[in-house]
Length: 305
Ligand SMILES: Cc1cc2nc3c(=O)[nH]c(=O)nc-3n(C[C@H](O)[C@H](O)[C@H](O)COP(=O)(O)O)c2cc1C
Image (cartoon, rainbow, N blue to C red; front, side, top):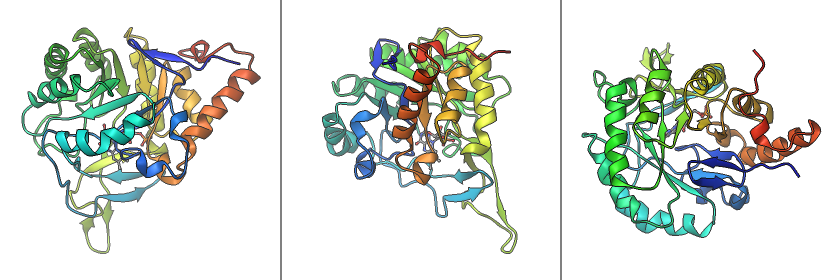
């Protein structure tokens, strides 16, 4: 049988399919639909130091070939997460990647990481430096600034020895510069992409469909942007890429491997078909067997240009 295993830093995954932060809750929500143990890894909803109620409703709406969301990082906060959510996740025996974000001060990243460093159940930390739905309109995302990206990762690197993944934003002029900054600061991998900023207006009421106005666009609509980001970054960095953005089936997942991703993450598609990630794992096995490939590593970056 073909080898589906991959490595993210020193973390070994049995297969390269994970679920994207914010689209899979804390996993228990999906237990009735799939065997969670089959997933390559689980990335949990971004947590912050203190609990957050999130943004006003409506926070989601459909968009052509995708959706808009401005959840605003609703979460129970670090300590409640560790006490109430982690014990269930830990029992699954699947590598756990915990997504974290700062709210007011980017030094919170290191505080969160230091606390999580002591928690054995956690395999890796994902730094969500790219959430479009939390900062004031004029505030620049960390992920839009290579210097801020470098500084945040450097501070987190000092605070923990866990595997570090940095989640990048497509809302930048040159994503390569941000990926290079992440690599040189000690990130073990980059995850890309977070949502693209977008807006949709209800003409009858003259109001934005999302209460916050501007929101994050996800789903198949953004896939070509995500694959392009993956390919651009792959050619310039040495650390692995976790590719995501509009994956809905095996073929769309394979696009990311061909463009250089070591792993893929499934997001919005979980809301349409909660079994999709498992179907993709099975589909990749069939693709490798059908093409007489020894493993997924043979596919990574093999697009012919
Ligand atoms: C409803 C919703 C909530 C999300 N929440 C988070 C989050 O908390 N942290 C994060 O890093 N990304 C979050 N994302 C972004 C996804 O993880 C992913 O990067 C993005 O949606 C692109 O992948 P997709 O097109 O497969 O959904 C969220 C996306 C959606 C649709």
